[in-house]
Length: 246
Length: 298
Image (cartoon, rainbow over all chains, first blue to last red; front, side, top):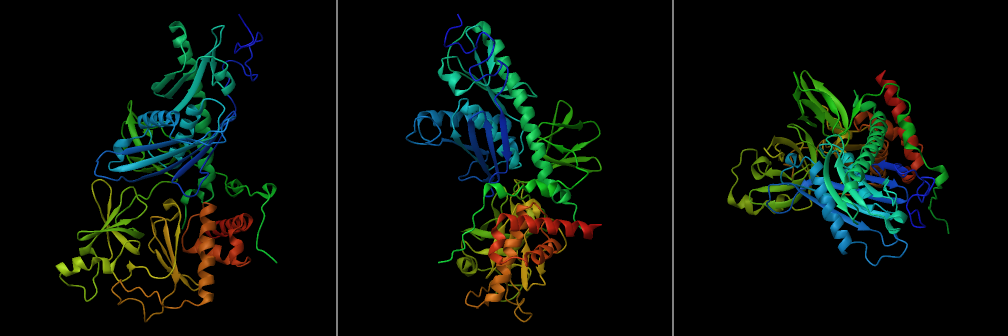
């Protein structure tokens, strides 16, 4: 069964040498730009994403609700084969909609009547799980902008090897090698799922374990992001001794 | 031909975190969704919400307790206005009997025609002609200094300029920083020793202008704007240096108030004004200013 294209070797290692439950290396940074209200940079393996948040600011028109506006764009140089247009294609529009849906589950929009929050996401390098990394970057940027959230919203992908072992955080190579891909965006502490997407079929018996794997990945990512946010806050605040001036 | 190009190698990159490294005691910081305390006996304030009988934080920041009121202050956010704040604002739209101005807050702010001092006396009726003349007083794009008079229900601010110290701004430079970096203090108008005036808007907009002589100050009703007046080169250099010093403070995340600006300005004198745009100069000024501020605190 374990053929050339299985996602898991006989030794139980994945194509890039990870164990089934291991995430890729995560690096993130908050406050990378001066101009927007909040910004973040996130790397998960070789997937690299920048996010910027403008707002909340006055919404155009007369609606009383708050507006969450997203843009998902993928740099033309982000893929192995050069893309023609960075945004506006079907996939970007779909991702943009999914981002909007997932983020509106986290943002406390009742606090922002008549306001608009703009979230711009740019994928600089595509190495799989773009949506998940884009959402994680957007979360960090929202936190940097001081926007009220219910909690961290994080996304993680999972797959299933031929030997029915679930895999966390799949890379581009694993994606194209033909495994199924399940993306979960969750509020990990509340254990609520805000968004779920599946790209290929597998037997329903495995659905629960794969979702649980993705959720475990979400919790792990949340802890990493939280640590990054705290570190950023301490660095930002302690230069001025947390505003204890005269 | 000689050029002023400066090349920064990645090797010489400044690590801004060093500025923060010297503090010993660090407060507890909270992140969104983190439990602050059980709800019983406490009141939830800004930046918090109640879920499952616990008060949770909804922003990333430091906790503030006032008696039983618990709130979390984010270190960086849009301007949240309070009555009495001094702000610097830009007119974005002229409407019926009011101006819409941008104050870097969540919603546009309002300046009513009735809350400005019109030329020709304090107690003057606002006539229909005044309404037609509104664009003469303040046009789109004009900068003003004002005070927050009132906060409407959805959170938009109502401003007023009915004092001679407020009004239209004339010649100077606008610097934008995070609102949290400008602390609420008694004084927000300063004539600095270096020969320039600053208005530290609570909304993070800072106005730097040449200091006016005594005879010009006041009495202009707040709408005179003399763009033909010549500002000598020396004063312009002081203003440019001041701008760069304030931006250096902001870059180093140091609080911006009269003392810190004065210190940063003094430290910056070791550099040419244009050198203050370079990373290591900014870092050096930040470090020196921080050290001096801590010395004076103790």
